[in-house]
Image (cartoon, rainbow, N blue to C red; front, top):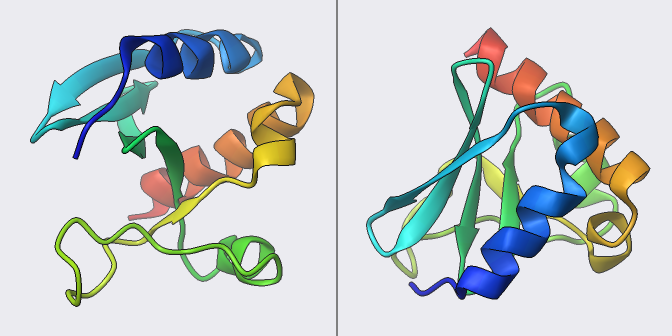
Length: 106
């Protein structure tokens, strides 16, 4: 689990449309928080967003991998963000709003 500062800064910049986002170090990766909710993880320079039954299909339709901090262990309900979404701030804000909603429903 490693995150380059440059990638974390890039994610923060791409998420500016979402409003204030805090990125904190955790267990070698980083956690993303907004509105008091934990909605994302950065690990090995990959952004993962919170999923539940209402937004999971969007990720699965694209064949995106689940975050697994320990290989072979069950997912923690976070899935990778596709590169084209990460590169589009408007699209990323939309996907992140879905992750925030999933975190709020938890």
